[in-house]
Image 1 (cartoon, rainbow, N blue to C red):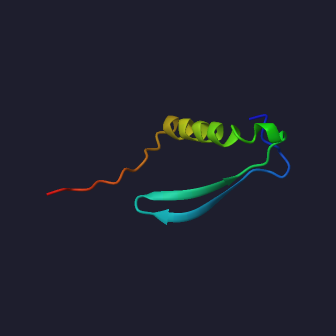
Image 2: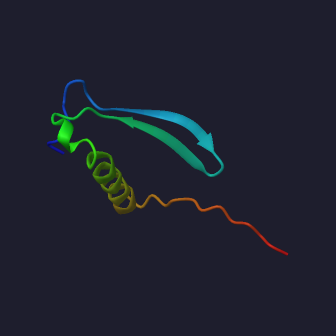
Image 3: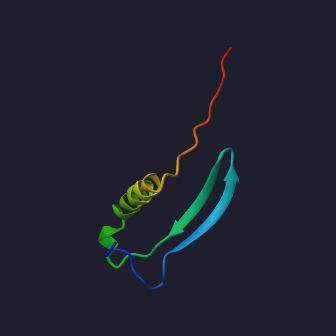
Length: 66
């Protein structure tokens, strides 16, 4: 994405292991502060699309009601 600055480089960090999930933190810098509001949403959509294309499935919590 051209809006993301290459310096400092983007970083990804594993934050926690959840119930059937891994939580990551993505840190990016933008070249244009006016892009900042829309950039995180667009980045998340692209990450989601890439994970889906790679066959990675999202876990969903299941609750059994009796």
